[in-house]
Length: 147
Image (cartoon, rainbow, N blue to C red; front, side):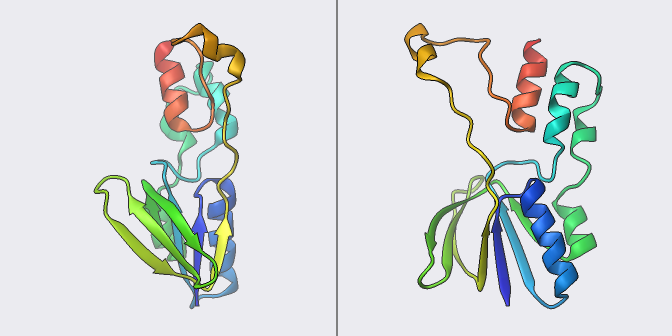
């Protein structure tokens, strides 16, 4: 049996850990287009406000830790570009190499979270250097650097 999880922040990694506790024999793969996994999104404002000094404290776990602790394969910087639910397959692109592969699954979990939007009211202003979205560690680093 094989479970594929799309998304590796709170929900995705929690599902992976719970699936492993429920079944030691299942193959678990997690794909995320971002670089960081299982991070403290609630801690981002504290990092931006300099109450948390090191951004690395917001990312206490990485893919290697999950592999060692839960035997879960997490692929960061991999984007699922197509889902074939009828044949139970996903097409995944490695964003570093641009290579694409097909993975079969028995169960598919979507844990992608939300997508930030920028209201159209700002589009008429052109490029704005101090308009930010807060969604991930990369955004937090950018805002912190700007400040």
